[in-house]
Image 1 (cartoon, rainbow over the protein chains, first blue to last red):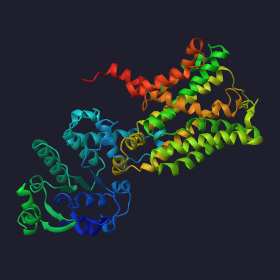
Image 2: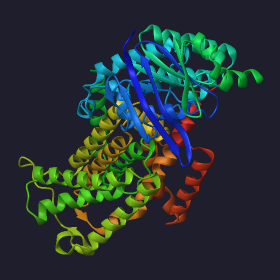
Image 3: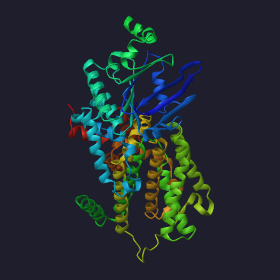
Image 4: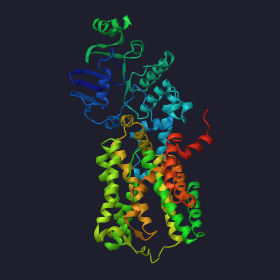
Length: 255
Length: 308
């Protein structure tokens, strides 16, 4: 079995009287696609934001590559190689597609501000630019490289989110409902990109409530309901798990 | 190599102009150049970093007063006085930026407005150190290696200041730092997720641009050889804001166009409407915000690259 890159233990978060995440534990292993799934309001996005440092947890531990990261600010977490996308696209509107992706590589620049002022960062800038171009091409936005981001469709904006996060050379990529609001063709496209990312050895933690999108894609699945883990296993195991059928599939089938 | 040749050509041409101007027009030209330098650095702070600060012109005054006080009230040599004046600007900028950037943008506007007002109070109440309401007058730039720089040669010094300011800001803008500043302006939460330290980026941008304003102030101190409180009043802080918005916020060329236009406009308008040019500025400002948020440079861009 491959070793864990992210270990979550006893993670808890309350909003007032509501327990959003309750004593949650799971792990993401090197190079795998782990799906975190559950009905709306199950605590998926909260879990995601706790791991990424966007919200403060009330308890528990999160270790990334063996080092505790809970309580670190988001930029420190990104620097350690854990990059994220946003469920609602959040591009930098005043920047082009390529510049957006270059911001994703922010933590990989080594030149000091003095070097920048002296003009001695030119070589590094060229290298990072080429790396960003590869990320843009990898997700299939090569032709829109120098376009303003308001020219992108919603689906292309989602691809930009992924390219931007990839430019940070993550060891683990957190994707927040990457298929939400996409057409079937766009969702298939995103699924192919995610498979390509895993094939490069980057672990993916994927949050999704669409089972049809997630199950063919994930290597393993963790199922949440009311902030707690109700099942864990391969997509096949989870699909036939009684608690999951009850909490989720029955619900989905009814819809 | 070609880039260096371009900078040299700009330096020679812009300096040469000064040798063909009368002393009155030389004075106008010098002040125009100083406004361009200020608008360029304010554009980086307001247009590129998105920080609504009203302290930029105050830092121009702090730089001017600091170098004059260190030189003539405290008798320091010129290099030391210049270094200390830069240090004073940097320390005051850090003292304002560190607490205000932790809060929302509105508080930075308030804190910097307070600093600009406080600065005038300190100048007026500063006794023999600041010269009070009369300021400090009748001093002269000390000789550098036995040479007194004056007349069009001093204009050449101001040209160097403008070009150096532009070079520094241009390099910062096209680097990881400039992109981080724009990212923080557009979406601080996404910027943080990409590994940008939002508070640190804001503080560095504020301090750097404030120091650039201070350096321009140090150079200004020897244009009129007078520093007094009315020169550094708040109306100039707003004029800078107008220059950047009307020219086109976020673009270096916009800052230059805005500074040249708004500085020269009163010379054209005064014979026609007297001192009511503020009214024209106000109308231009409202027009820019309502009709052309990208400013004059945005009109140029639209003509050059029509978007289908």
